[in-house]
Amino acid sequence: MAASMAGSNSVTDTATATATARDHVRAIVARSGSSFLWGMRILPRHRRDAMYAIYAFCREVDDAADEPDTPHNKMAKLAGWRREIARLYSGQPAGPVGLALQGPVAEFSLPAEEFLAVIEGMEMDVRGTIVAPSFEEFILYCRRVAGAVGMLSIRVFGDTGAAARELAVVLGEALQITNVLRDVAEDAERGRLYLPGDLLAKHGMAGLAPDQVLDHPGLAAACAELAEIAKNRFARARNLMAQCDRRRLRPARLMLDSYGRILGRLEARGWDRPREAVRLSRLEKLWSALRCLLF
Image 1 (cartoon, rainbow, N blue to C red):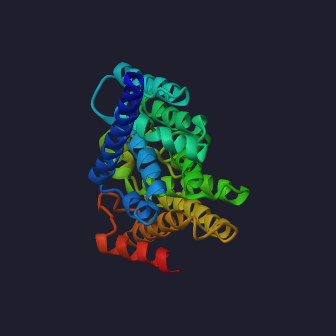
Image 2 (spheres, rainbow, N blue to C red):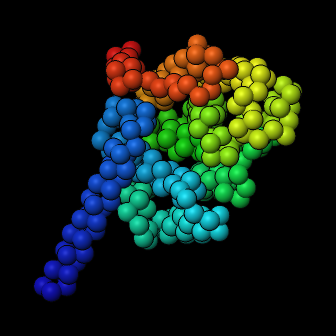
């Protein structure tokens, strides 16, 4: 009888810990105010909870790399996340995010290498402030910080065919390039410049500091050229989406639609005014979500 009661207590404790972990990741998502939130709200609850856990992991890893601290301490925090992923895949996560991921990893066969790729992307930021990377390094960074999230997401969405896998990477690149173009002034304030050095050199900005690039007359042409790359990625993503299960990939359609709007608005604003912020309103985000639900 005592053994039976002990087993019951253990099950209850595990269920309580899991519920607490889910509350923890939901709170992280709610605080973020991210466009991501709108896409996840249209998912069934068990898939939504899985995506919240993935987002919380990405948010906390990103914070480990971005919050004020020494590079040594940042790398130590990221190493701690590597250890947590190892514990997660051995069935013994230690933190609430790892615990929240435990069910989704088993249910959706989420690959460990994609979580590690996200960490590797953050390590690229920490090892040395990113300033004018080569185009190859820039695309690698996009694959790690955005494509890896896409590869995890499509498994949760429920379409893992070849077209969906390519879509995850291509759309990830499109979204990340749009982020870079939107945040070029904000990044420059932190001493970062993600615009590829190849483009900067082509338009007369080789070797310039981030704040100097913001006021250089060649910036508009460099941004316009990178925007064309993003538009090509968005076009490819739309073609791939037509080959996938559109119903299952509604959150990806929402991100494609929302970020496509942001890119269009950036172009309308003009690339020579990088300090003027561009955002979508809550109403626009809601309308995009409704369109993906209805069409």
